[in-house]
Image (cartoon, helix red, strand yellow):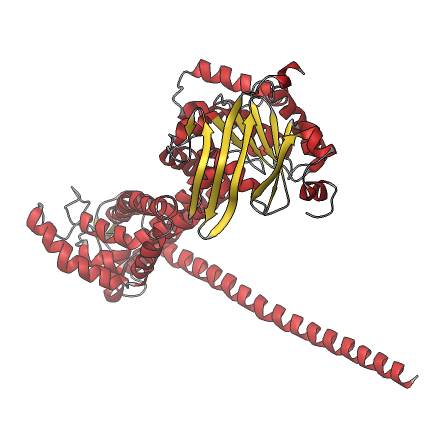
Length: 258
Length: 310
């Protein structure tokens, strides 16, 4: 309770942020902070812009042709929309996990070592340590330690997703973005990912987009509700789910639409 | 009562009618498709058998030693039975033009494919795709003619030799197989799922790192397939090569030297050899070698496709 009383440190400060796909105004005046070492869940119906929003935080959105962004996303004291930061440094610090596990068609070891390698680490022993460390942090080490040279496609869906998390951790990020990480998984594998996210919270700031409101309620500290490209409500997860201030939020979380 | 029976009746009729029609259509379709498949299989088998029988004549009937045929550089067909039939220079020539043209066309073709899919996917493909289709549409005799009127004089003026040369054949073939390699590579690169790119970029990789370390390894079997199919085309091409390579029966001493290929010797000599003569039979043996090497190319392609994982 004492930490909550202190002013929380923010990692991302989003202020009046807008995004267009050509003429389509996909995100409108988004303003809210993302706090350090917390899980922030983004919920909302399909097409509300939540995926677009999370892709803006590591500027993956700017890879899409025709995307234009304005406003302010402050990360590490600089506005990443205006200042055109070095994408290599930004994405090294802000990792991302996608809807479906997307390992490279290479060995388990090569997958995890990919990030460190492209960021300049050549030392074999150092790479081995980093791979082991990342796999341990994702609770995958015991399952794969005897077959690190096996192709990553031989893993199950849930293991592939955890491998992707290990791959993101290996670049030593501050933030990990999860874009509906369990929507393609069975409940048991999904549960493991949720447990993992709760563990990772101790060391990383986490932003998760999810369709599953129970999931948001279970694992997040803060929740932001998006609708039609706007951020409708942001607050403590418990408070937002038990006592939403906004009528639309209430209608959504009680299942009346969406 | 009456209306019900009428409804039943029409329903029944409709059911029977459509099912009968379907059955007949089904059978007809099956027969047509089976015949088509049968013709393809029959044609392949009969050509293979015919070529095998004719190709082995030289060894069985004329007493040509297969080892000599494959390794000797002496090609001296006569009518009096003292023929020397060593096809090694032609086998070497065919393999040399094939490998060298692949060596030129593969990097250019794959580079073009990467340009079209990764560097400038919006306009690159719009510009290059029609160019490539155009290259496919040009008949091989035109390629040969251009080689003969432009390339051969150029080589004669600027390099040693008489212009007709191995390198002239290689350059003409490179241009001819470029579209094959480029279009297959482009399709392969474009079919790579976007989530591979996303995964790499999200880790902070640059475009070049993504291409080299994620996309290229993933697409490698398909790129090899593209190269092998290009090589198969180069290996089988006769006309354009024959027009620029010089067609002498010796091993080339350099890439500026004249030589010949299996295909160019077959096209040149089939007209003026007597059917059934040792020389004519030896040409069939060369045809058999072409077939066998094509089979090897196909086996490699099949092996590579089986290894594809993305």
